[in-house]
Image: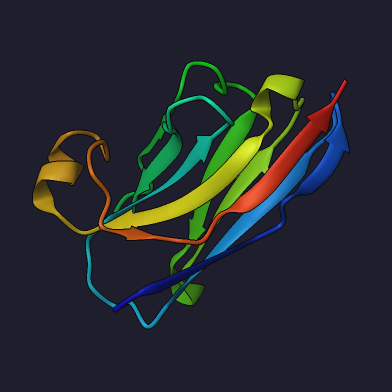
Length: 126
């Protein structure tokens, strides 16, 4: 059973930056997709960014393109999300997730993810 532990959330003013990290313990299967999702109060969870483990192919929500960058350190099983030019509407709980299914990879790392972290709060003030 893989464990995902996020860190790096916090409070920042609009225009600022944060970097989220997600450590995946004891996971050696390849390939897989990893992603960052977020959920704000009263809103549905949305996929912010995702990455394919084998070649680093990445996918972004339109709302964060050009501002957020997803990356991975395969040697240390760690996923990152660098968030620049943050806006108040980026405020949410951010979750890290991992899925090894072939269907998810075929769909561009989109779909139902199997493993989830506990989430980390990001608050952006105006």
